[in-house]
Image (cartoon, rainbow, N blue to C red):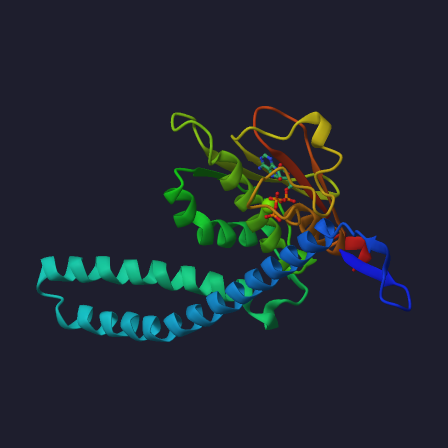
Length: 264
Ligand SMILES: Nc1ncnc2c1ncn2[C@@H]1O[C@H](COP(=O)(O)OP(=O)(O)OP(=O)(O)O)[C@@H](O)[C@H]1O
Ligand SMILES: [Mg+2]
């Protein structure tokens, strides 16, 4: 609010002029910018932590391999060391997946099977999902062919879907069978990824707005950018994305063109 007072030459008060400006929208945009920057900073931090964890992990795994060779006669200890080895391998895989997601060099287009991207991304989220009591059902068709895309970006789409599912199912009753279902299929021309969850689903009247930037129904946590980013990414990778309205859980269909042999 700007206020301006007018006086005459002798200093007597004449008028008061004011300008009232609604800055709610500006404040919201500033808050959104701060949150986006914070998320970017957290992402960078995660990448550097993953990097720091990676080297000692590789060392520990190699040492455990040596220990196993030395104690091959002590069966019980050997089995225990084997278990520790497996646990470290699992941590190594998680850290590798996290690094692959963040590594700028991998943010390039390559020919890759989407089944592999799905497997790695779900592996990365599995512990988080388990914590939230959410199971996964992954049906990947062996008929799906590799196609040219940006794997990190496709992974980002899946992570956005998964985050939304976690948030959507947060308030579901404990007795609800909380699940994320991802299927791949192959038609004559398309690679089809169907993503579903067992949350409240997306209502018919929201379906047209769902990919709009800043469309959110979440009171405190959402900026409403996740699905609009997913939309941009899928289009950039020559695909299409749509949501199906349903009260029986969210349902997204993402399609990419099959690499056609004639075009080679
Ligand atoms: N799996 C889902 N189940 C139910 N509703 C969903 C699901 N995914 C998205 N939505 C609805 O779509 C809206 C937009 O999703 P989007 O990911 O773009 O934004 P957001 O999750 O609200 O915020 P942000 O992703 O920026 O944190 C959500 O607010 C929610 O109402
Ligand atoms: Mg979201």
